[in-house]
Length: 187
Length: 211
View 1 (cartoon, helix red, strand yellow):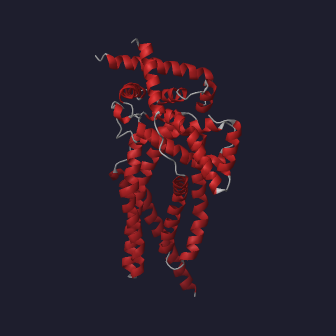
View 2: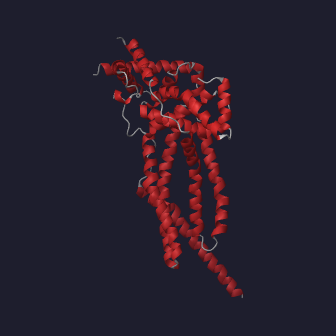
View 3: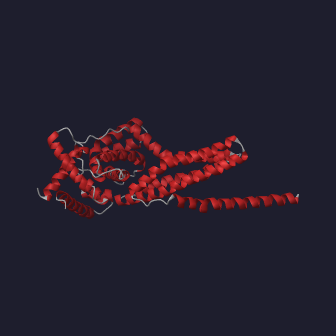
């Protein structure tokens, strides 16, 4: 997602006092990471609007914490940790007014009528099932959905052993299959 | 479609739907101002309370303000820093959810107490203002009253809703809070004030007698 050279450059600009360079760096970081972070937030918060809010809050938290970021982890690892926290916070905050996503029109993608409508229906079904997973499993499912992320990095983000990532993902997928099957044949 | 392929197809559909999403633009200036508000909010709040307490100090607001700032401000700053570090140290999502629950549960209780304390302070300072008969002193109970009302209308509902959403323990009812305020704050304060007053009178009486 972000190579080491870009990471060092962005961090230097974000920690520096040059306002223009700072704004450019946060803009570049957003352009590079907003989509994968949205994928993660969508699976943790289970709501497209909440996921957008969580991505925005993530960047506020990045700005607040970038000077104290010690660089012991990769920038992306740190970013994912912050994102999961932000998405969990937004999910908790909107829990009273939220509903499980069953209305596909709330999901993105509305400019290609047939194929995209089908995608949205399917996505809403899966999201409604993910909504019923425990927080720890939702986070693993969300991270695993990000393209190019290895189990080792997921383990690093969540602070769990690599083996646990595999077993948690396996458990989550089994549970999702069961939930989807239940929904297909109620009663 | 069997469950296996069904699940994989749904997973791909969700990823495609998310891929097509256009993220809302990010405005660094708005982000910066929001961050600044978050960080400065607690300090400004404390300074406001200090200013009120200083105004309530009878004749020497400036030195009382300095003493209070010297005593209270480092503690408040240390609390903000400690909370920041505490949150930064949380790694797992479960830990974070637990932290949020306990944080909002504590906040919900604290905010109810704060409303009652500010309302009680408004009443006490109103009595002081009424007894001294100086018009300017009414500004102190007015500010405490406004603080209590403002907190009750804005902060309290937000914190209680957040606590409910996070699944935190509900705060005590208002009756219990009032009883606790009276038993553990007002009565001990009145007792100490009464003893101090008696001691002061006895001391000044003896001095007067020696002369």
